[in-house]
Length: 237
Image (cartoon, rainbow, N blue to C red):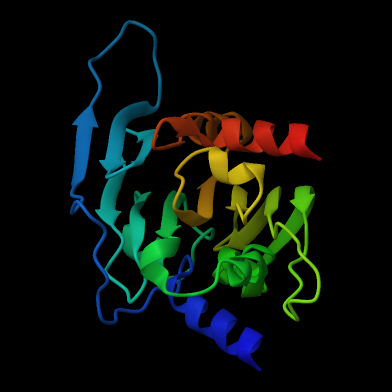
């Protein structure tokens, strides 16, 4: 029952179903900034760098960004989309992105429970919307915690995946990376106090796969890209 309650509690901060609650602040307080890149002679859809504390991502110049609302967990991140209200209701059915991390020190929840959230609930409405389905998944690390306490496990989980959503006659492709560092070597990569990383991006059209690849490649948490987190997990298998 304790495990179930922890998962239900953490579900309040998942993509597309974020609910406001009492606030636990990250220190120092972070503010959302949006920087427009200088025009170049090479055409590119990417024109904005969004930063929220230790989170940074490159997004298309026509999108808008919004800081994630406060919750009772210490979380830092943002959403961005050309239709940001639709994204917050049902992530993945429109173009957009969402990236955040959770400070394990401020969440007041044992780090082992982030492992459970990373396995599915971290995808929010992407995992529950019937219009969306997973097309491929790769799990790089999967060391299940022993909640009985009888044995020791580092409790880390790192995975990526791709999928599609079909809405209003349009096919939207999405990719994600989710990581729960646990107590093992993965904790030395990225933000030392992070219990969970979530990065989701969605695009459509002929260049969708390339757009998604570039957005994920230009997502950074502290001084580490999400692709570096994945590469670290590959080498720890």
